Image (cartoon, rainbow, N blue to C red):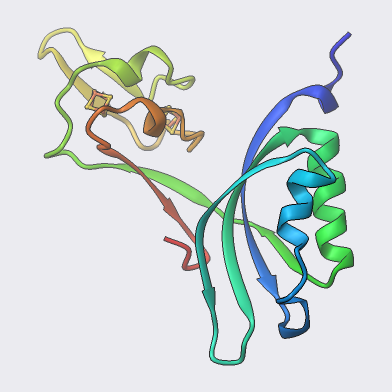
Length: 147
Ligand code: SF4
Ligand code: SF4
């Protein structure tokens, strides 16, 4: 039987690396040791040689918790990166692809106008629409200065 810890999750985290950890392959360990998927959205080194990285992580909840605990043990700062979604109104071609999978109905077809409307108040920032939009009109904006 599936437990909450078996559920696949997707999180965006903001990591800060002290200078002494810059040579360690800790990020690779997330995949190698903990079986997590990751993609680096942004990375930079500050003038004081502190590394900053915004990363999207996918995997089951137990692996995610273990992986984040491992990063903290290595002295790496881990914080959730708040994200919100915005739509490029001029770019949207109102194809409707996003409406089928938007879980909160923040993207919905207006039957009268045949246009897809975006209600950002209803958006949970799950990011699903950004993966299907053929013209990349749905954009993820991250806090922590990430994107
Ligand atoms: S981010 Fe998620 S909730 Fe928000 S509009 Fe896109 S699919 Fe809907
Ligand atoms: S998938 Fe993109 S182009 Fe199509 S309606 Fe949604 S936001 Fe607009």
